[in-house]
Length: 257
Image 1 (cartoon, rainbow, N blue to C red):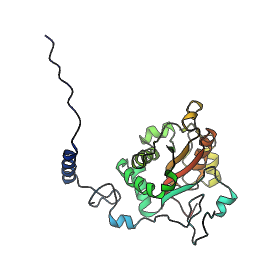
Image 2: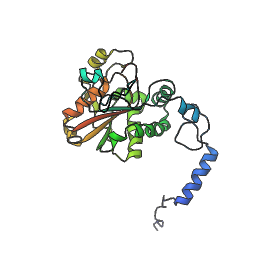
Image 3: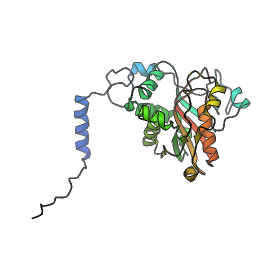
Image 4: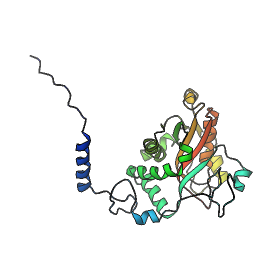
């Protein structure tokens, strides 16, 4: 005789019970600051001391590059860099300056396998990029070469794009932009060296071009330094007929930019 069959058990957890489970989890595993490990009232977030250690980027800034101005230059002002060499993207924004606590957070995500840091960074990116995200169609993370992705096990830009997608409601596509050339690390390279290093490295394969054609794309990365990677990625997306490309990062190197 065949054994009696039973319908699969439902995985639905009532909201009230979810609240109880969340409170129990907080008792067993109290929320901790992802930067210093100190206690938090709730997650995701930072403790007050680590929050004060961040330099948030605010206007006045270059409307194209998002680099801060020492004084207010007026609405729509552009920096000399943006005028001398207009980038292939429309606007770039970053939440904080890449220094101190911001550097610690990026390193924990990027090299410490701390994927739990991504939602905290994404919340700050959401605030910094609200004008970019208001009419965005798609979030596209800067890709890693498959060899580097295999060694690192995850792409930090894709983790940020996924967390930002959940927070903003804008869909993300981590596969449409590909890195087809294994480049050397950009750390320590000058801007011209970075540009040469990235030549031909980023593409949108022809079969995938309809996934970005005609769309307002926001390119997502963890850190903007010289902007060479963002420019190479934006060119690849524009060649795939993206209508507009903006760039949103968690942090940027202000002095170098």
